[in-house]
Length: 195
Ligand code: 5GP
Image (tube, rainbow, N blue to C red; front, top):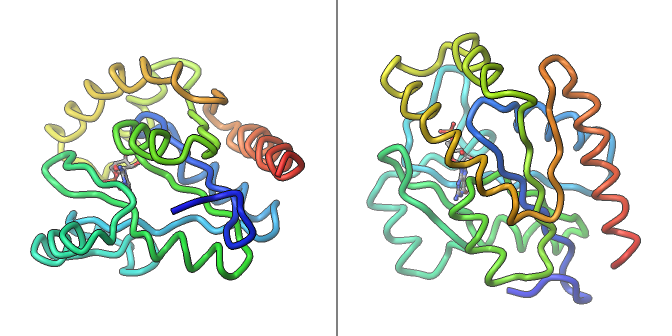
C-alpha cells in the first residue's frame, strides 16, 4: 500500500498513552478539517457501554480477526491488553478512494510497523503535561477495572519513551483539548501543503 500518489491520500498516525485524550482531540480536529477520515480499527475487545460496531471499532471475534490476518487484510495489528487490535487495509483504501486523508489512532508498536512500511506517514504523538493527569482521567472515565487501570498506567510510562520516534509531539493539557486539536490541524494543513 502506497500513499502520496495519485490514488491515495495522506496517512497520519496518532499515538499516546491511554487516558491522554486522543479520542477527544481527534474528534475536535476532524470537525475543523475537510476530507479527513478517522479510521475505525478492528478489535476483539468487547464493546464498552455506548460503543457501537462500525463506529468506535469493528468488533470482531478472535476467529474473524485471525482470518483477516491470514488474508493479509490488516495493515498492522498488535495483541495488547489481552485483545487483538488492528487497522484494516480496506478501511484506509476506501477513504483514500473517496478523496480523504486518513488518521489512525493506534498504539506505539503498531505505529512503528506503519512507519517501517510507509515512511511517508506523518507520525504524531500526544503527551500529557504530567503523568498524574492520566491517572485522574482514567479514574474519571471509570470504564476500567482497577486491575486494568493499573496495567494501563504502568504501560503509560513506557509509551511516553516512544515519543522520540514521532515527527511531532503535541501536549494535551487537562481541559485544553481544543488547543491540542488546533496544533494537530496545523500539522495536517502543513502536510497537505507539502503533498
Ligand atoms: P482501547 O481498548 O482503550 O479502545 O484501546 C487500547 C489501545 O489500543 C489504545 O492504545 C489504542 O490506541 C490502541 N488501538 C486501537 N486501535 C488500534 C489499531 O488498529 N492498531 C493498533 N496497533 N492499536 C490500536
